[in-house]
Length: 238
Image 1 (tube, rainbow, N blue to C red):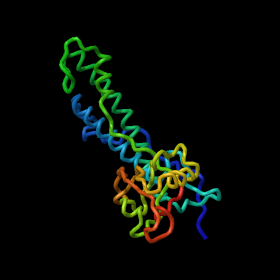
Image 2: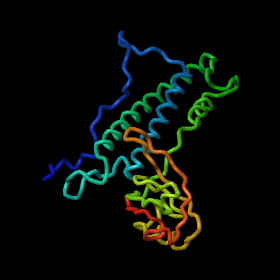
Image 3: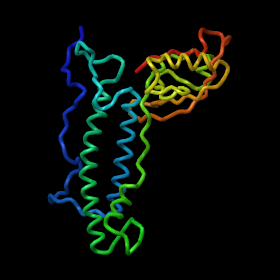
Image 4: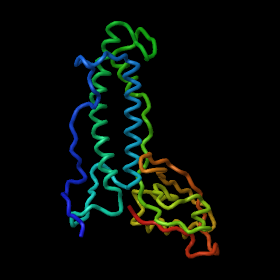
């Protein structure tokens, strides 16, 4: 019999504050504005990648990882999700501390007349310098999935479209996480588009440690392909 666990399994405990370590003499070396901006971009890119890992499981930072009886859910990788959440919390703390450093660095650059890593403009105000940093594009955040592909039949329309078992569906024609109604709308789209291609977007994880990658597919429902149904795949809600 499985071991019952605490209800707060989905809320890992981590220390607050930045995870970077000071130098041997107890002080951190002063960093240039360019270096701080590069660190900000790297942090935001990693946060986006980690968010896509959660999306691939159909969970967020607050989704319960236990059943109603208090046991770990069997349909998701609880250990990976807890590790990912803990890392996200640490990186968000790092990001908050880094933004404070960036603000100080911008003020110092403005005061000394140096604008390293920013457009050279003697009339540029302190506010516009802050806005320049804040407006730098962050890595895109992937849409949440609403269904998982449990199985794909060889030779089926789903396989020919490139769909794989384990894929997480984020878009199926006009259907997404906001309107799928426990996948009933997916069935409607399939019936309405027999022998016509449907645009499908899925999230695919190459390995347990890699982030999800979005894949755009063209799936054409059809009969007489040698198996049951119009797709040849099994979808379950997440």
